Length: 460
Ligand code: NAD
Image (cartoon, protein in one colour):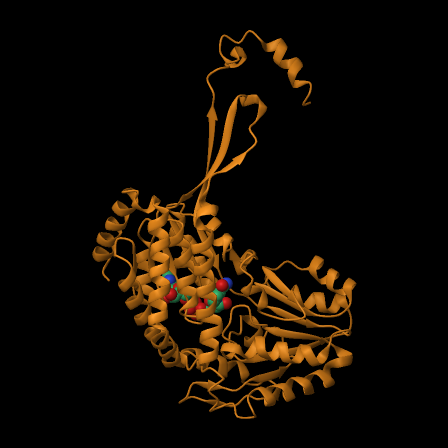
């Protein structure tokens, strides 16, 4: 879409928003229902599209793309009317008599920029929140998942008029053109460097925004962990989507006394999960593109491999790989791995483990496998991160009661469920004063200074 075309479409969205038609809650709920029904109709096409993009297994599409979206849609359809009700708060006695309320108001025109790794879910979930709250939306899906982008465009076209929501496909230039427009809210999911670019681009208009970014997520296995369960849960969380998950464990920290035993358990688990057939396994995703494949293969050069390391450039396949303690200044540790490679470090004590974690920016997630209450509390207290799980990984994502987002360089703001409602609306405070009493002290001429000073003594 050219800049001119984008401007035209946005003008139409602006007029539609200003027409106040979106204040009609029933209309918004009908649209959510229509989106749900269209998704049901297109389910097979969605599964096929994501498979074409990077061989994502059907079960993974059903469970972590479609299921979570249906859950989110159902929640908004069920709760929107009650969430939208103005909230009465007690009034300040200085304003007596009055009634005070907080209203939730849509921002207006929302831009959603999405990544490729959960290409459907990470596009539609923010769109649901934005639409439900009464905004208009332009969605820019990732150019790396073109088949998913096509089906997204088809679904949105079938449900919404362009003046309400539309998909704008394209790569970096399109994204930049979109960011040059004036938005009322921008919701970006992607990498830390691009998040920084987005923030700078919209700073000119002081546009409110959410940044859902990434980072290096530590996964700690302490000397009290249940190794059997930990091995399964870590292999699942790391190698789901072939490691291309923002909240996947990035590296493992294991108490030195358990390393040999635990590594054996990890390898056994991987062999069981994938029946020792990694390359042609329908339950194991591919890498999204040649560029991403080359980057990951480069990471493995000169590293000490414990397991895996096989790759096939034609298939864009990299097998689940365990790497022994890479140097902290090696390429693999310089950035978020975002692939099926798990570096393993050992530690002797809490201080040593803490020193490793604190080398990196605040992560999006942190995981600790432990059965010792004080160890768990110490970890939770010591480190700052977006969200975490004790004795599992990834699963905090599925509870829509928990706000999902990062901190520092791993993100700004959060969403999911009611938190999405809060993200895609702003609070508007209204004090409704009554006319039957009007104490004159505050009006000029100010001849009550002495009295006011006495009154202030209660606060000093
Ligand atoms: P990315 O930052 O490369 O791209 C994300 C989006 O930004 C795409 O739509 C892309 O077209 C656009 N974009 C790229 N360069 C741009 C530029 N210079 N200016 C404007 N727009 C630009 O990210 P990705 O590779 O698609 O996704 C992987 C990253 O996203 C990882 O870092 C991962 O941790 C993060 N991520 C975070 C979450 C989360 O919820 N916190 C979820 C998924 C992925």
